[in-house]
Length: 109
Length: 124
Image (tube, rainbow over all chains, first blue to last red; front, side):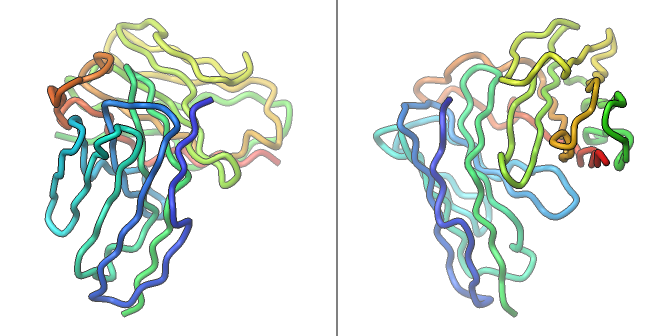
């Protein structure tokens, strides 16, 4: 089945640092999504991307839809302790959403 | 608007038993999808329902089944539980099923899936 390669698997960063994570696919997709999951909760949609090359921001978060339609990255600027969680990339085709393996982010105050 | 609600939040069962999980979508949402999340396999799609009909199914055995009611609420059932069924089961709702590909940027995050908090199932 379709696999999304997400990296890095985990990150420890200092509060205030910028963070970057990415996701690649062997297939082309026209909808890329980024979700965040905190302990004991379901994933929360952060950013949705629909156009190749598109750069979209949501507060301190910025995501880009790769021009080849096979990749996407998510940047978090000036990290704060509440950014802790697992970040998932995902692609949607029709109703089916396929998730990446996740990037576990830990922020050191 | 209230979010997606799932009941129960936690459940402990023994091997061989069956279990039913419930999901109430966001008001106005008619599509409900179910996912299984485990440390080893990550988030995996189980099935999706719209208008009381199963539209898509993931690669899970027949022991996993679901249904949707006329008010869009959904249930999933797992029969003959196995130890490996221990997982977080997540329900997600959207206004309508995904419309294929939004080529050229026609999509809207308003139509994407919104998740509930999940039901943590432990099989002993």
